[in-house]
Image 1 (tube, rainbow, N blue to C red):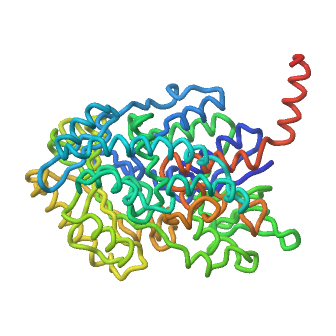
Image 2 (cartoon, rainbow, N blue to C red):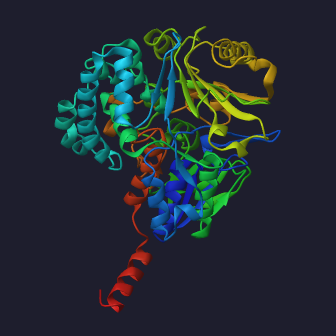
Image 3 (spheres, helix red, strand yellow):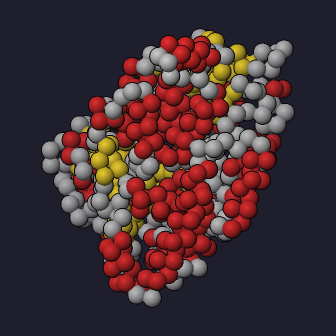
Length: 505
C-alpha cells in the first residue's frame, strides 16, 4: 500500500521504517529543511546543537529497527553509554551523581540522609513491579475501553492513582532526595505532582539499561534512521508542509495529503507524526470529526513549554558533566506556577546539556557546546514572549554565571534561543506545548488520543500526543504500534508465504 507519513520525528521515522520493511511504499513529508522534528539540529559558527531530545534510553528500540531491516546499528551510528547519567545539583552546594551503580547510589543517599537508605531500597523494589507491568503496555494499543479495563486491576494494585512525587515521598524523607527520584516526568512533559506513578518506571528503565548518547549528537541518530529508511526504498521530502488530509466524501477515509505548495500525495493510509491536536484541528475538516472535535481537544490538559538557549563558549567548563539537572530554590511551588497558574516565575530549575563532555567534535577545539533548558508555561498563560525572551535569557545566563560557570557571559561566542512561540509556529504544537498532551492518569492509555482515529479509519498517529506518550521510548513505541496495527502489505505476505512453501518451511 501507499502510505504517507506527515512529519519526520522519531515516531514518524520509526513508523516509516517499519512500514517500509513490511512491504509498503512509504513517503515521509517534512515541513522543515532537515528531518528530526523536535530533534532538529542547529549548526552555527562551528558548533553543532541538538535542538531537542538528548537523553537516549531503551536502546534496544533503536537496535530492533536496524535488525528488522537486516542491518546493524553500528554500521549507521555509534551509540555509547553515559556515566553519570546526570549530576543533580542543589543550591546548598550538594551534588547527587546519578548512575546505575547501586553502591554509589546508596553511598550518596547515606550522605544526604542515612535514614533514607532503607526507604530507597523499598522504592526501587516497588519500581521494579511497576516496570514489569507498565513497560509491557508501552507498545500495546489501547483503542477500546475493554483493552483498558483489562489492566485496571494492575493499575490499582500499583497505586497508579498516586502521582510520581506522592509515590516517591512515601518511601523517602529528605527533600533533595525526593527531587532526585521524582523529577523524571519532567523529561516527558509531566508534572511530578500530577503525573501518574506509573512513570516511576523511568528510574528502573535507566537502572537496568542505562542512559546513552549518539556520537555526533542526537542528530546523528536522526540521520542514521533517515539513511536506513531510504536504503529500504522509502522517500523523504523536505520543505514540504502538509496543509490538509484529504477525506473522501463517500467512505469518510483519507485519500491523501495536500501540501501548502499545492502538491498532492495520494495514500491508502496516512500516518501523522505531527502534533495530534494540530493535526485534527488544522488538517482535518471539522465535519469529518464527530469524536475528535475542537472542543474535546481544547479541553484536554497540555504539557508545559520550554525556553531553550543554545550557546557556545570559547573555554571549557570541565566541572560540568554531559547532563546536569540544576534544582532551584523551589520545587513544588515552581511546578505549580508552570502547570497550574501558568505564570513565568523569577526562579527556575534547569537542564544543562554539555555534549562536548563526551564528543568534543561538536565544537571548535578548546570550546564547549551547550544548551540550557527551562520549563515554562505553555501559551495558555499570559506571558508575552516577544518582550520576555531577552530578559529571561539574561536571567538564566546570570544564574549560571553566579552559581556554576564563572564569567560565562564573557565566554559566550555564539547563541540561539527558542521559546513557546517556536513550538507553536514552527513545530505546529497546540498552545506551544513542548510535549503535547500532559501525561496524567486521565490522559493515559485509552484516555489518551488513540493511535488510530475513531473518526477516520485509515488515519493513524505516532508521536508524543498519542499512546504511550513523549520521550524517545514512548514515541518510538508509538511508531511500532502503528506499524503493527497496519500490518504487513498483503502482497508482501503472499510472497513470504510462497517463499516459505518453496523452501519447505
